[in-house]
Length: 349
Ligand code: GLY
Image 1: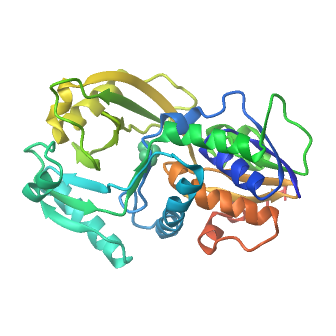
Image 2: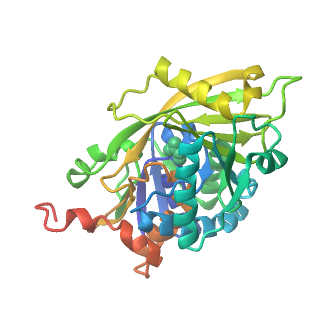
Image 3: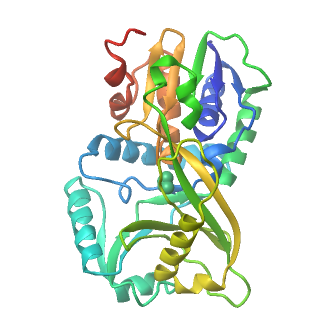
């Protein structure tokens, strides 16, 4: 049995703590604001395909491997808020269509399921989609989770498995750094590797008489900006902007205006919804958009840098950290996340 302390109580820290405690390790978790931060703000997409970019094949493979673990991860947690309804990517004009064609070809090449549909066929699936939607993709395998329900389930399951929520950082055999965008200040090797990438999100609630929200996640590209709408019980999370502006957590008026404008192009009915929340969070960015999961030095594991994919990558990250603790082979797709790709040869190694 290993005594470990996990620094950071977002989705990654909680998942690591829970899975390690389930395996019989002695786990303390330290975070003055457990279950908040970027995990609290997140849209909740579990979307390796629709978040895929050319040149990021390792991330697509890692995300797909983690998504395969999601159903049993959610089932073990009980009511974790997993939705298996799938995702639609909507195109409004010819340029969007061209971008979607590239995405469809790229993911089909990698053996993933995508169907190209007309606007009409898309509106049959999701009647709330507006007339401006000309065409799109249906990606049944890209799922979503209610991030706040998940955090609450993870917190309960961790406590039940014996995780101690510590008020100060206790002595331990192994420290796991899982402090998201703040991880850079916790170890010299991470200082230049983890940076905050701000994102604003909105929460909207359907009022009586308004069109009900869609069942699937809707993504789109409007005036060069990406927007997504992720269903929640009787509402939507609309996200997200993306800026590099340090640790500033104030939502920007222009960001909120763009999100509302872009969301309305896709789902005109949301103008009747109540705007119930505007929040900003800080994604933990890494230099190559892959997370950093592995040993930093004897006694210190890092599990951060998940950038736009913290919720998606939680199951495989937790399994990888547990495998490292137990000196077992890690999932093959997680090898690409080893921080050694940046730290080899560093004076700190
Ligand atoms: N995963 C979506 C985002 O970070 O905005």
